Image 1 (cartoon, rainbow, N blue to C red):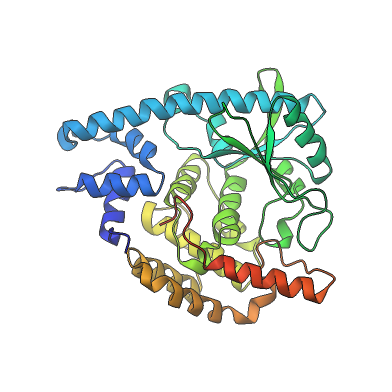
Image 2: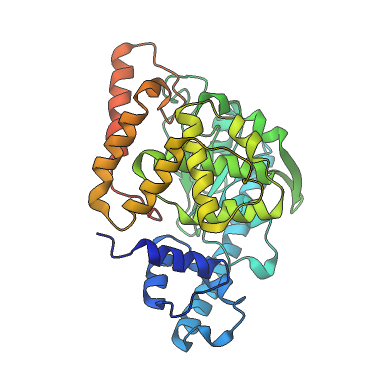
Length: 362
């Protein structure tokens, strides 16, 4: 058991939207905000509450401290990101930033502490991975995780992500050359084509449009992390989706059309429905979502706070998508030439679905 109910989740969501419910249990809300890595977002939202006395003094002091410390940490991450971009530009690479790193570059200085970052996501073209790793090593980074050239399962063109870090930095760099998920997203040029070239301290970086950032967040949670199978919520990323949708008009129909009918479409529909149910999204009213997506939303509500339901409901989810088995793979469903390698890879992927919940997942 997690100790939190779906009612606690709704209370936290209301607070994140700036409208705390009457009689809110701040101990439960703060505990859930810490678990979901949205505590800094809660601290930022608390400054917008219409009634200042809605927050007890000790809660206000705690959230103010969180905001101050996260602003300091994010300032260090911003400086670290600028230095990394400079190192990459030095070898002719203009990277794309994604997830928290992209949001960080779009923040005003007064808002820099409003989002908790765990690392810096940087993407480069597949042929640039080796040079990018070498460039980061020249400015002191050490490889914490790297599989080498041609390591992408089933496709030697790609390089698995590399994690690089320095002992004194606030976070690591997650260096990638393509998103995990359906093979149709494997060509990173679709990200570059929908990004803006931005100057940063005399160097250049590409920042994706809100549309692309939403697509990437869906790919990350539903396909890479397997939240669709596991019935998990990444509240921090769902909040990101809602905020990105407020910053620009997202064509949800176009976004859905990027994913093939069946498992892929069901996964993205589930995420859109969840974000809409929790935070409200503009432009989704006229869309028709499939029954499985609605069932998955109901499953997430039922499973929340009842971890004992996770395994049986995950098995049921796998059975509902059995006819789309070939496209389950988070690496894009591109098969190994060897049947034995492919079977072992599929078994590893299935085992991974039942691993313990990662930090931040609810």
